[in-house]
Image 1 (cartoon, rainbow, N blue to C red):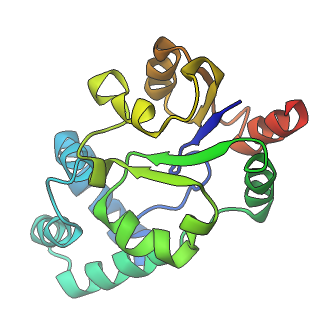
Image 2 (cartoon, rainbow, N blue to C red):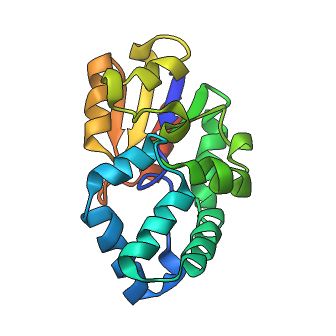
Length: 195
């Protein structure tokens, strides 16, 4: 294995934006943003909107105060968690291959989450769709190729997105789909065992 690509949200981290708002307000935000217009979220992940602009829009739609939304949003971005077991497996794998965090995420990831979690010390490379200007699956997976070391047939992806896994396999790589039955930790342990 030359390069291991690991996804963030839904794979090694399950925390959500605005999670500490309280269930009623959190539900209103989810409906306003993620259910009303999925293209808006995709554009945010492609870097076309800033987190401030999105929080302003959410405030308009929900009637929740911008300051409350923004402070909660920043705090939640900075306090996302990755289990120490997962980090231990990644540390072991870094000894045998290049490990790249590849995420369809927003500007807040680079601004708040990455520095708060010191992710640049955990991974050999970090590819965020917001700074790349495209999602992982855009351009038939061109971001994977950009961050690849070695041959794609010797590269592995661990991701909860079936679409990302399919795109990666079409490129010639090996993809492990994360789900409730097989969480990321199981795939990483298996990779360590076979390394």
